[in-house]
Image (cartoon, helix red, strand yellow):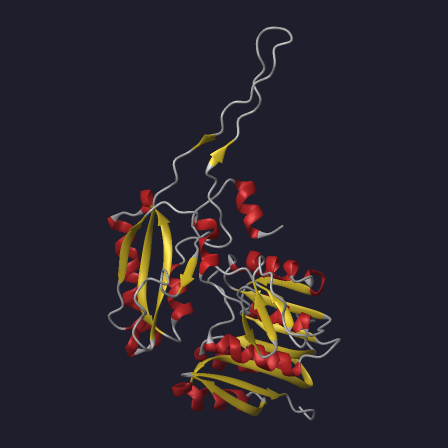
Length: 352
């Protein structure tokens, strides 16, 4: 079941993003006349007033947009959008872009605003990135709109390393050489646009082979595991400490026809079992401190000769991260840098 269907079934609607729809109308049952033989009449369609929304908007440095999106994910059903609100809006300054989320007007109160500002203020200290100092949010009332579909005005399919990443309503024809990857945007767990995600997708496209078993550490919405399955991987195992990410991963795998080859778990590396070894490939799009602390664990899960795709590491932390990979016995073959983000590709040598 797609996420939007689950939201409908639960009667939930907490954001105007791609996978959450606001129920705007109730259709009452047919009412029959009192007299025998009376012609049944249909009650008029009753529509509730469109709910009012507040947009929370943050202007942030490129390369940190998904981290900001995670901060703005105020509940499991939060929608987060990237980029300027409309084509008529002023373009952001070079090197910056907008991250936006939405809350019902009824939830927009001083306590929520203070919580958002507190989360943003903590980012500089927790990451050590000075460019995140001084971030602030703007709170903007929105006019009524069909938010369930308005994202389609600006979101466009794009290509990454031979993957054509498209949404459900895409009517175009990918190139003959493209591998179609269906992704409905709106989640905060990986859109394919972040440099670290792009880097891992390139390695997966190049190295995943038919019959492979692939481990996706910190899977988020599962885009790397699903990409590996689309490249022919026989089985993938993804895990994430955020339980809200797993429904996205399940939906992504289902929509791309690889659900039977994808298994998802909630937890960190501790959720792996003794038998979870001998993987042909390991993907990890994680922050540098996690890569360093779990490098040996990732190496232990690979078979000798198996490949790895590791990203999420800032280039200024390259030396310490590569030292941790080498100490774990992982052999670096390529270091690719996009912006300030590194992607590492290599193998576990056959003699390990």
